[in-house]
Every structure is written in C-alpha cells, then in structure tokens.
View 1 (cartoon, rainbow, N blue to C red):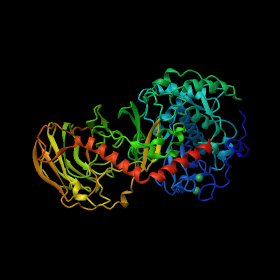
View 2: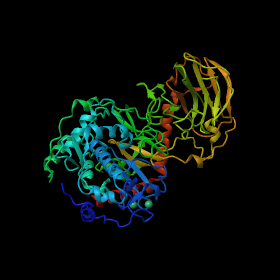
View 3: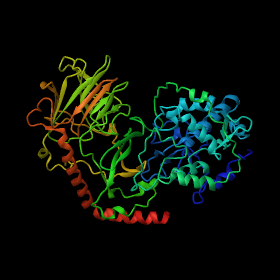
Length: 602
Ligand SMILES: [Zn+2]
Ligand SMILES: [Zn+2]
C-alpha cells in the first residue's frame, strides 16, 4: 500500500511513448490547481484550468473528471476547444467520487491547501461504502455521469461489487472491510490518461459501427466493467485473468440490508454535467428507421445530432469499416447520409429531455417548467397544417402550441424568443419573442382540437436565390460521431446572436379551435424553416395529429404535415447528390488522405 507519490517518474511511464509529458500547464502557463476543475488535453496532454477555457466558457462539473475527450485550441483541427463525454461506468464514477471525497476530506483538515498533496500521499483515505460513498453518489449522480439516475436501489450492490473488483483502482481498508479508498495516492494523476483508468476504456471498447449493438436498456445496463458489447464479457474474463496486481485484494463484505434500505434523496438538478443545457446526453432508446433500437444523444446547446446511415451511392462506403469507433470523426462524413425518419413524429432527441413521449411518438406530457417538444420534420415553403388535441391539463398546468425554428430554446416556452410563435391555453394569448398579446380571448381546454396553419411563400417564390434553394441541408459536410455503437452527424449550431432574422412578407400563422379560425395570429413571420411544436407547463398532455385524417377539415390548400416525410426524403436525397457531384474530386482526395492517415496510425 506504500506507493510512491512523486508523480514525475511514474508519469513518464504512464504516457504513451510518442507523446512526451508536457512541462507547461494551460494557456496561462500556470500551475496545476488541485481541487479545481481541470481538463487533460487528448492532443498535447497538457492540463487546462476550466477557468481559462476560451471556447467552452459554459463548461462546468466536478473536479477529477475521468471520462472525456478534451482538445485544447492548439490541438483541435478547427482551433476551437472541444469536449465530449465518453460512456461512463461505475468504475469511472467511483474514481471520480473517491478523488473528490479524498480531496474534500483533506481540504477540511489542512491549514494550507498546498499540504493536501503531501498528506494524501501518505496512504489511502478510506471511506465507508454505505455511510459515505453511497450518499455521495446519491447527491452527485448527475455530476458523475450522464447516464440517467437509477430508479431501483440495486445499483448499491453494483457499486460495492465494483469497488471490490477493481483492485488496481481501489483499496479496501485492511482494518475495516466496509471501507474503501483510492489506490492512486497522487490526486494530480486522476484523469482520462491515468494508466488504470485508460484500461477501463479498453475493456469498454465497442465493436465497429457496422455491427449493431444488442439492445441497450439503460436501466438494466448496470454493468460495472464497461458497456455490454459482443464479446465484452469474454474480454473482461481474459483481461482480468491476465492482469497482475501487486495488491492483494481483500474481499469486500456483502452489502448489508442497511445499504439497500438507503433511500435516494430528492435532489434538484440545476445543471447536468458537461456542456449540456438543452438536455442530458442520453435520449434513451427508441426505434427509429429500420435498424432496431438506437440510443440517441440529445441535442444540446450549440450541438445537434443526426442519425446517419451509409450512403449506398458512395462507392468507398465500406472502406472504413475497421476504423476504431472512437475515431469516427476521422471517417469522411460523406460516406454516410442523414437518415430522416420515414414518418412525421415527435423528435427523439431534438426536444427537452424531461418530457414524456408515448411509444407512437405523437403524445407528450410535460413536467415542471415549460419545455418544448417538436416534430422530426420541418418545412421551408408552402401552406401546411396539423392538429393538436389537449388530452389532459391538470390544475395549474398550461399548454402553448405553434411553430418554431431550429434555434428555438427547448427548455423554455414556445414564443420565448424570436425563433418561435405560440398560442397559449390560458386566455388564448399569443406569444412571440417573450411578448404576449391578446388573441382568441378565451382558454382552450381538454377535449378541444386545435389547428395550426402556417403559410410560407411557395417554392417558386424562392427561385434563382441560391440561399433559398429550399432543399434541406445535406449533413455530409459535418463530422461523424460514434454514440453507443451508432453513427451520428454532429453539427455545431449557429450562434443565436449571430443569426439575423428578417420578416418574410406574407408569411403568417393562423390557429383554429374545433375547426373555427381564430384569425391570423402572426403576420410577416421571420424567414426560415419551421417545425410543428408544443410546449407544456407542468403535467399537461397534448397529442399531435399530423394528418392526413384530421378531426376537422384542414383549411383549403393546406397540406397535412405528414406528407412532408416523403417529400423531405426526396429533397434530402437530391441535396446529398448535389453535394456528392459538386465536391466529387475533393471528396475522393479526402478518402485517400484519410485512408493513408489511418494506415499510418495503426
Ligand atoms: Zn490556466
Ligand atoms: Zn492540446
């Protein structure tokens, strides 16, 4: 248990040989700041203070994060800092929790913060599993992982098992087997490139994207040694038998009844960890398209994800099958195409995460404050219509329905900013850019069927205007991301402040109550693409009807939004083909370069 703590020699051994240990810290050329949130760059391997970050200015979280890929400005291809979460398992969470607990413990007893390192180097600080570690997890769950909180308390057992099993990471107190401490005594070493932490990721390696994963049910995926993948259990067995540890594992006592009696306290989550504002990363599992269960990353502030499939029109599409899933961003994105759902439903991942969506993805129930759910498809021109039926609106809950653009805030009401327009259940008020105006003058209630009509200029109106080509954008020019074994396009959202909206003369929105028009609600609405959307306050429930069969006849000339699915699929295919044709030479070169690069790195 007497491990040396003067990191230097060990650090050299830990880093992969081709990346020398940097002597500099951060852009500020300062010093490591134990106990503050610092990020370890995957490129130059320098540490960066969270407070010094230049692009990720909204980054937050607990110190001692271990499961991410961060690139500093110098190491990022576009010279902008990037950060992405890797899938966490209980081992990662335990390391992070114990490092924080250890630091907090010493921070309370030492006079000078600088002494924490030397005191903590004396030997592991042990914590009682059920009395200290479990409560820490319960309090900080959202800061330890993006996986949803476990509903059942069976995770306590998983936690105990993890602590007992990962003998290289955790030491059991020889004098009290209910207590566990961190084996690594130098807290400065805790990060994504710690040798034993890296091993966890290797165990969790996923198969290439073309091998579908088995159904990942997040609530049963209590695996303590990485995600469940084909052969993972076998690899784990092989790995653990080949592992040699200088430490003799002491058997951790089985969890006592008291442990499983522990009740998760109710914690209000202000911010989930990381950069996420629109929602948490894991959108749960849903069926979309033809290839089974897919876990979606939620769109988040500044970043959107689009499910991708291989494009059969690209001859080189199979040449990157053997690329490590972690390196998905090295694969030329144009060999994939955006797989738009084949019917208009509520979006899986482009909505506020806390909303409850029915299996058919047409009904949505709110929770707490106003939050937005929107459809999978958007419109760029023409006259379109859909209905919403209010199924439930308990006392104190409200509904706003209408239309929104991509940049509308999802954790807000519809009509919150200049990117959305809405009609509220209470008093029939209409809202845009946070301003409410008198409109239909009476509440709409449970049982009412509400019609939403949008009229944009027809496609011909935009002819000759390159910017207004009225085709959905190809995603082939974006970056690929492997999320839980599936490939997504990752697209940076335009910054709201930089988007200039202009009124579109003649474009307007009208609402209908039980088939009767309430009059034009908004005229000369802002130009752009529009999604059908609702926002719900507390537990109101609304059901979308995208047609073609409406409860009340659609206004003359208006098309049911369901027709948009096929139309958009055709338009997107056209958009993709145009991109492939226009960039043919460039794309071919890119394929060759990427293949060469990948060949030399392997
Ligand atoms: Zn700094
Ligand atoms: Zn760097």
